[in-house]
Structure formats: structure tokens, C-alpha cells
Length: 173
Image 1 (spheres, rainbow, N blue to C red):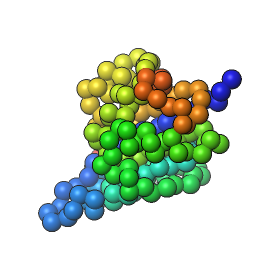
Image 2: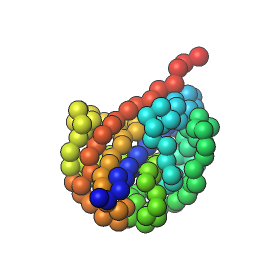
Image 3: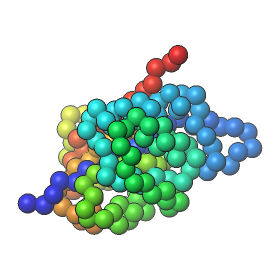
Image 4: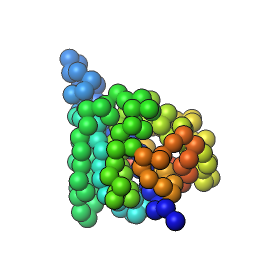
């Protein structure tokens, strides 16, 4: 039987929009700074600890990972990839296809609309209302979990099961 794979898709936490700052350099805003650690706690509680992280090079995505990672027991290897920034669903699938075969769980951190489109493309089935909720909105700090049996390179449209959709939020102080 082929190994079970998990693709954990994370949209970066809420960013700020400082005047005169290029999109790629935008930092997290106050809500994003609260929510990103909550994402890390959710990953740990849901037993979705990645073997590898593939993260956009955008500042807000890198900050999301740094704050989430601080909540994990151990830090997996991370690859910061420029091509994940502003990628469409096909570019994201191409990046996922290159994941080493020994990795069972990949955390992909990026941006909409590419991430939402990727989830909708890959999910052939769903548990509960996760797919409908993803169609409606994939907000900042949202985490979707897709599973399938096979290799990373075999991941194709409609072949994954969308098992979870969560939107962890941090508490206001």
C-alpha cells in the first residue's frame, strides 16, 4: 500500500499595509502577530507537524512561519521559495511535485488566490463542510489539510481528501 501523504496548506497571517512598502516586503499586522502563534499551536494539537516547510519569500509569510514554528516542539527544515509568492495553483502543484519522496507531511505557506484555487483543484472529496467553507473563503491564517496515498509527484486534480479546515485565531490582549 502506498504511504499516506499530507499537504497542509497555510495562508499567511493578516498583514499590514504600510504606505510606500512593496507588496513582497509587507509585514504582519497586529492581528497577524496574534494569529500566527495560534496557527503553530493548532498544528501541534492537530498532529500536523511537517517534515518539510515550503514557504513564500514574502515577509508576511516568513513571519507567519517564524511565529508558528516557535510553538512547535521541533523545527522542521524550511525552504523559502520565491516561486511560491504570487503563484497560481499549477505553479504550486509543480513545487509540491518536487518534494522528496521520504517526506510524509508538507506545510505549504503562501498567498491567495493561489492557495484557495489549489485546494479546490486537489480536493476530490471532503470530510464535513470543509470544501464548501473553502469555496466560500480561505481567510488569512486558514489551514487546510489534504491527504492521499501515493507519491508527491502523483498528486493531481481531484485525488486528495480535504480532511480539515481551521482558522486559528489568537486572543486580543
